Image 1: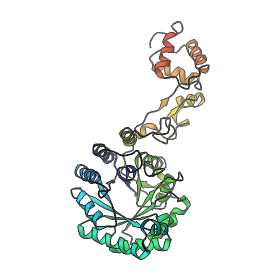
Image 2 (image 1 turned 60 degrees about the vertical axis):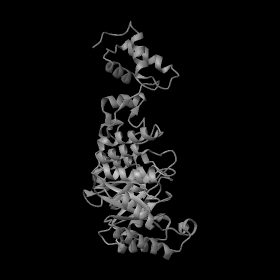
Image 3 (image 1 turned 135 degrees about the horizontal axis):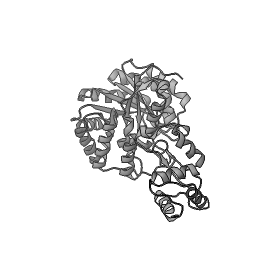
Image 4 (image 1 turned 45 degrees about the vertical axis):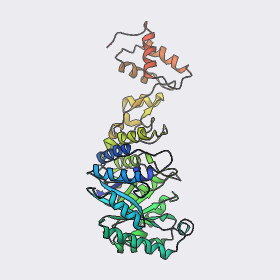
Length: 391
C-alpha cells in the first residue's frame, strides 16, 4: 500500500509505565519510572502514559512526580469511566506542562456481559458522562479507549466513538485488547471509527502481541493513515506484550518513502532507552530480538563475516549506529579466516598466515560455542613463534 501522504506527522504515545509496568515482573519504583520518563522525553516521545492514578497511592505519586518533572512531552493519566478515577487523574497531572486523560470504555459484548455486566446503553451513557466530566474538570485533551474494540460489533463501536466525540473527546483509541487483530482488517476498522467522528478528532492504535502481530498491525494502521500509535519499549505489556517502539521506529526509518510519515523520535537514542528499561526491570531479552537483541547486529558465520568486512550492507539491512548500537563480529567455530584476521588486527597485532591458520584450526575443533575477545587474544599471545611484532 502506498504512503497516505508525504511526511504526514505521526505522534508516538508510550505506555511502558502503565500497560508495560502492570504486566507480571515489570513493576518499577518511582525513581525508576522517573528515569525512564526522562529518557522517553529525550527520545522524542510525544505522549507518556505515566500510569493509572486511581490504582494505588504509589501509582498516583508516580504520575504526579512525572507530571512535575517532564516538560517536553505530554503526560497522560489512565482512568476508568468513573468520577473518582477522573478526579484522581486530574489531580495527578495538574502540574503537567501538557496533560491528557485516557478514559476506558466498554466496547465488546463479551466485556459488557462478563466483565462489567451492563447493557450497551449503560456503556454509552457511562462513557459520554465520563467525557463530559473530564471536560468540566478542565481536560482539553481527552482520549476515549473503547476496550476490546477489535471484537466489538462495528455498529456499536462506531456509535460509542460518535457519542464520545459529541461529548468532547479529542481522540479515539482503537485497542486490540486481546491481540486478535489481523493486519488485513486494520484499514476497515480505522474507517469504521473515522466515519463516525469529526475530522478534527484524532484516531490512535493500541496493539497487543498475542498472535505476534502487534508491530504488523501497527504498521498497517500507519499505512492506513492513523494519527497516533501506542507503543512500549521492548514491547513490554500484558501477556505477550504490546507493539515494540524500537521495531516500529526501525521500519519507519528503513522505509521512509513507503510510509511517508515523520516522527519526533531521535533514533540514535533508541538502543539506550531500551537498555535503561532492560536494566531497570531485569528484563530478559531474546538474543535474536529485532533491533535490541544481543544478536541483532552480531555475526558468527564466516561467510557472512567475510562479506560484512568488505561491505556491511551485504548482511546488515539496518545500520546499528543509526540506533545507538554497535556491530559485533563474534568469533566461533563457524567463523572464517577473514574474521580472525580482522580481529587480530584490531588487537594491534600482525596476523601472519601461519598464525591465522593455526588459530582457525584450533577454533574449528573446539566445542565452545563462542570464543571471547579475551580468549582469542590469549590464543594469539600463546603462539609466540607465529606472532608478529605489534603494528
